[in-house]
Length: 113
Image 1 (cartoon, rainbow, N blue to C red):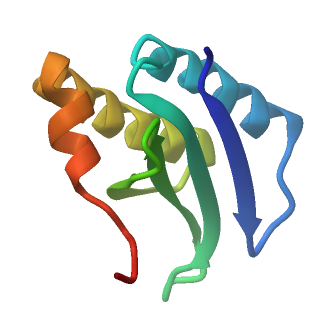
Image 2: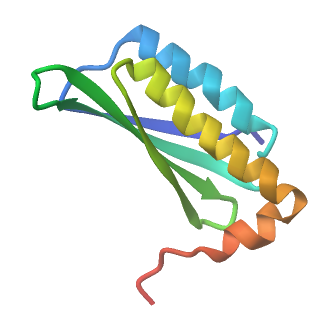
Image 3: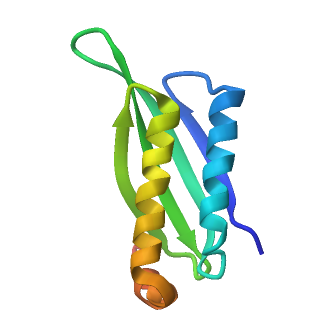
C-alpha cells in the first residue's frame, strides 16, 4: 500500500538526480500511506529578473478518498533543495495532524459540486 508519485517538469528537462531526490523524499511520505495514496510534484524553472534561475516546487498530496491537499510552494536556486522543502512542509503537515490526518485532511475536497 505504498504512495505513488507523478512528476511534471515545466520549463526544463528533468534529470536522474532530480528524480532520485524526489524518490528519496517520497519514502518520507510512505509512513502516511494509510491516508495518502499519491502525490503530484510539479517542478518549474523560473528566470529571475537578474538572469539567475530558480525552481518552484509544488506538491499536492492525494488522499485515499481522492481529496487533494495542496502543500505550500517552495522556491530555491537548487531544484533538489526546492523538492526537499516541499516534502518537509508535507511531512510537517501530516505529522501535525497525526492520527486525525485521514479525517481532517480528507475534508478538503476539490470537487466542482
